[in-house]
Length: 396
Image 1: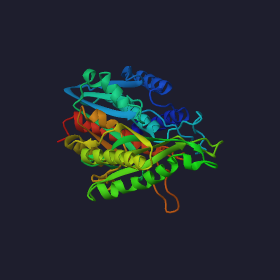
Image 2: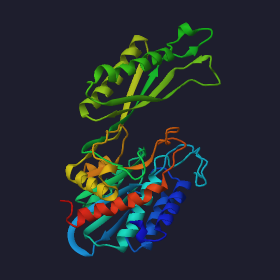
Image 3: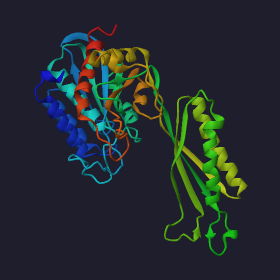
């Protein structure tokens, strides 16, 4: 696909690396959204910035008559992770990096925008959705609430996410749930603190309560979720006391973590049992517990018709041998689900590089991760094939 445009592969890779070197957190993507808007305008694409604060939408109308409108979505934000890749284009913003490949997602959609704008040989309209704040800051919801689909009423929407471990030049998707719903919960234990050296018997030792709680949490999935179901419950944050005063037993201790589920019933079971265990263990030790939760994402549920189109586009791009149409669902999350709750859609996966026998490819959300520029031509071709299948009556 890119061989029709000499130099475009290098141009898009350069944009990707520039974005990687200047990462921005969700709803702070001022520089990134400015780059996207400038490139779209440079290619004479109708451009609408500022949707959902820092989101950008581009509109490409086909030269053939047609009323169908489809959305192609890429995310733009980075993560609060300190990069350790040592690459020439490594992050220049301390403690922030593109550890999930959103720089590559944005670059691939920009490449497709360039190709489609110069060859609008399709019937209908393509809506290019450059979304902010996928990483837990509500970017999809912000764009929807800002009238994204009121202004651009799409008939179907498509997303594409890179997957380390899947070789470059391969794609995957599945009908139905592909990624999980997410919750971010926290429990605060409160009791009487005191001197851990001279008078520990006057305290309610919250570290003991937390120890029992952490062990009990590990029974929730194994003993409350049917074996045919899939769920994850993890603790990622514990804080109490003061490192400079280790003799002082804390009066407050916080435990925070995440849940990932595929069904509403399982989700409610996990949240109910977390709170029950916290309350009962606190009561058993004479202290109090406070539970809070925030749903951070919904199930990415691929609709039948868009999934068929995405599968056909992937096969057209790389052949049947390089496409997995029944990939194992992931307990990772994606807020693209919130757009798919309004418009039927499909999220597909693109290979970011397979695992060598001697070394595993750096995974998402890790300090060594980098998007693989070799995947760019495949992503651009995939997007263009989705458009041809959807807007030229070839979806079948």
